[in-house]
Amino acid sequence: MNMRRVATGALLVFFGTALAFAHPGTQEQGRFSVAGLNDAEAEAFFVLFRDAIATGDKKKVASLVNYPIRVSLKSGRGQTIGNSAEFIRSYDRIFYAEFKAIATKTDVRELWAKSSGVAMPRGEIWFSGIVKNAKRPEKYAIKIIAINGSIRSSVAR
Image (cartoon, one colour):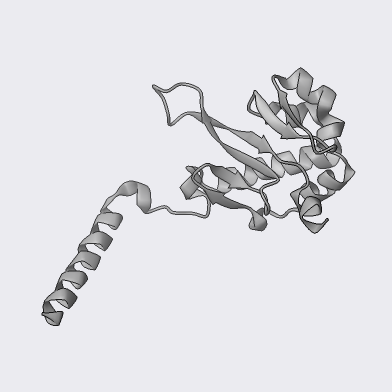
């Protein structure tokens, strides 16, 4: 009886592996594939975001956001931002000195992903592929979907 279980288990592993390699979408698995993004595009997006934060390019950062978005302000209060003009007006309350320092020091190797998107180490910033046309889901734009503020400092307090 145990031999039958071992043989059945071996066959399941063999066929499962064969099916995985037969499916074209599973052959190119990367760190961010669970979020539907390839590594190069996710890393390039984050570098673009990080550089815009470092140079204080508020308009560039605003262009990387999916609206409306709920953000955490320096005060700890949450706010929903409806468009880029509102975002730019609130920018300094969203990206205060401590938060900017964390964002600009984060290396792409520290990013991680789950099905809802790619995140900075403690979930301070989340981004994902946003499909604008359901008929063409392969066409998407990567956008910031959550800004949770300086989680590192609030954990340490």
